[in-house]
Amino acid sequence: MKMSAFSLWNDRKIEDLIGNLLRAGVFLSALVVFTGGVLYLAKHGGEPADYRIFHGEPNQLRTISGVLHETLAFQGRAIIQLGLLLLIATPVARVALSILGFAGERDWMYVGFASTVFVILIYSLFGS
Amino acid sequence: MTVWEFTLLVWTGSAVAGLLGSLTGLGGGVVLVPLLTLFFKVDIRYAIGASLVSVIATSSGAAAAFVKEGISNIRIGMFLEIATTLGAILGAFLAAKVSTAAIAIVFGTVLLYSAVLAGRPRIKTIGDEIPDPLATRLRMNGSFPTPEGIRHYCVRRVPAGFSLMFGAGALSGLLGIGSGAVKVLAMDQAMRIPFKVSTTTSNFMIGVTAAASAGVYLSRGYIDSGLSLPVMLGVLAGSLVGTRILFQAETKWLRLTFSIIILLLGVQMIYNGVAGKI
Image 1 (cartoon, rainbow over the protein chains, first blue to last red):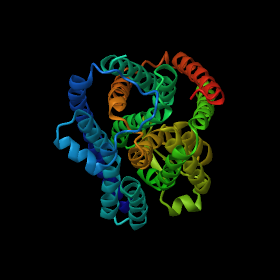
Image 2: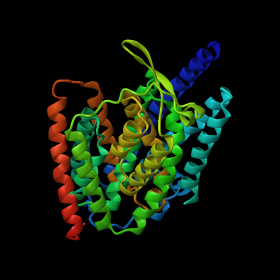
Image 3: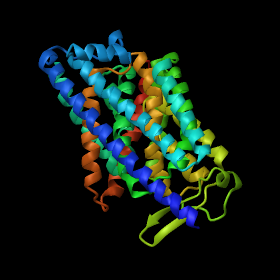
C-alpha cells in the first residue's frame, strides 16, 4: 500500500499545479481582453453596433500570426482577440502539464492518452 | 444602438446568465445563445463563437477550485477528453456545413432536454463497489474526500460512456455550449460515477472540449472580438459572484424558474428555426 500512498501524493501535487495554471490563465486573459476592450470602445464606441448579418471576423484576426501582428499595431480588437487566444491556450497548457505529470509518475498509458488529446488540440488550432 | 450601448447591455445580460448558470449548476452557455440571437438579433454563428469562448473561461475558473480540492478524477477526465475533443472538431465542422435554421432547431431541442433535466431533482449516483475489468485496467477507480472520510468508488461501462462523450463533444462544437447535460448522462447513468466527482470532472473537461472547436471557429471568423468582449467578461463576472453566494434554500425555486426560462427559450428557438427567422 506504500506505492498507492506515494502516487496519491504525486497526484495532489499535479492537481495543485493544474489548479494554479487554470486560475492564472483565466485571470491573465480577462485582463488582456479588458485592456483591448477599453481601447476598442474609446475608438469605436460611438459607431452603430450590428451583428444581424454574418460577415465573419476580418481575415487578419482569424489566425494566430495575424492577431499577433495586429496587436503590435496596438489595435483594440486585436488585443481582445489576443486575450481570447490566451484563454483558448489555457486548457491546452493544462493538457501539456498533465503529460509531464503522468510521465513523472511513470504512468505511460496516461502519457499516451494525454498526448493524444494534445495532438488533437494542436491539430485543431494550427491545422484548420 | 451604438457599440457602447450594445456592449453594456450584452455585458449585463451575460452577467445574469453567468450568475444563474453557476447558482443552478447548469452553466451560463445554454441561455447565452438564445439571449443573443432572440433579443439582440445577433447572427447565430457570432453567438455560438462568443458563447464557446465564455464556456472556456467559466469552466477553467471553476475547475481550478475543484481540482485543488481533489474531487475531480483527472484520469477519467483525460481519457474521456479523447472522445470529446474528436467530437468537438466534428461538431465545429458541421456548424459550417448545416444551415443556421438547423442549428437553431438542434439548439432548441437541447434546451428542452436541459429544462426537463433541470426541472426534476437529480438522482445522486453513489457509485459502485464492484470493480469493472476495463475500468480497472485504465486505472479509473478513485476516491474523494467526504465529511465522513475518504470514499472509494469503481467506474463501470467505459465504452458506453466514451461513445456518449463523443456525442457530447459534437454538440459542444456544433452549438458552442459546454453540453453538461449530456456529460451528466454519460458519467452518472452509464459509468456510475458518484455525482460529486462527475459534476466536477465534467466541468474540468469542458474547457479542453471547447478549446478543440475554438480553433475551427477562429479560422472561420465565428469568434468576433467586439461581441466576445462583453460576453466573456460578463459571464465570468456573473459566475464568480454565483460561486460565492451559496444560498441552499432558494436553489430549488431558482432551478425551477431557470428550467421554465430554458423551456420557453427552447420553444422560441425551434419556432424561429422552423419559420426560417434565424
